[in-house]
Amino acid sequence: MTEPYTLVGRQARPEDSEIRVGDALVGGKELAIIAGPCSVEDRDQVLQIARAVKQAGAKFLRGGAFKPRTSPYAFQGIKEDGLVLLREARAETGLKIVTEVRDVLTLEAVAAVADVIQIGARNMTNFGLLEAAGDLRTPILLKRGMSATIEELLMAAEYVASRGNLNIMLCERGIRTFERYTRNTLDLSAVPVVKKLSHLPILVDPSHGVGLWEHVPAMALAAIAAGADGLMVEVHHNPAEALSDGPQSLRPDRFAEMMLKVRALAGVLGRTLEAP
Ligand code: PEP
Ligand code: MN
Image (cartoon, rainbow, N blue to C red; front, side, top):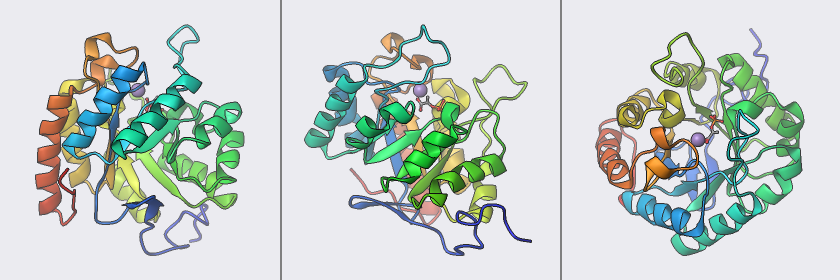
């Protein structure tokens, strides 16, 4: 049977794609660890967290400057000021920057700074944005929509690829189910399924996946065991005061502890995670 996703499907490319981000490769043997705050808040916050996640072994710093929030009254990010701070954090630490684009209007500003442009769950079916991202060659981190099937996620990736940008990493971040104890239901079965259907790397975001920091390490380890190519984890030095997603953010010490276990598990699975 011919796959509907002609560019991102395994039939198009039987071997795994490795996405180059500077001197890092995502989708190879080495696990990609993206960590940082949900939102960039201020200079001290982002630099402090950047230093901590680097020390624990992350190679990528996440942080939203433009935040597409469910409520228009919720904190929307510090926008261009946040991009300036991310640039500064990269200059100091060497971490690669993963930051979210809110819409087509903010794409140019985000692309000028980002090493990886994040397209979030709320934008997975923003086809104009997917096409505009496809016209760039910057790597795209495409998150699964909260009610999207795996096929819809792959078709969204196909929109980006159809414009010539095959530098795409997918991200499972939980889907909406009847379960209310957790924020979302982290669909780890998406990892082996996507691996079978597509050559693109797939990462897992256990922070949005469960929404509760205390369960993040367990699900991070489960994601790696399931074959994920890396993790995206929210870290905040003062979760109680975070302007967004504090309840699911790990303190730096807990993140470092989790990374020790991720590194040990990587060894068992024939993956690698460089020591910091
Ligand atoms: C985020 O990464 O902070 C975010 C908003 O994620 P998602 O798009 O998965 O909700
Ligand atoms: Mn968040």
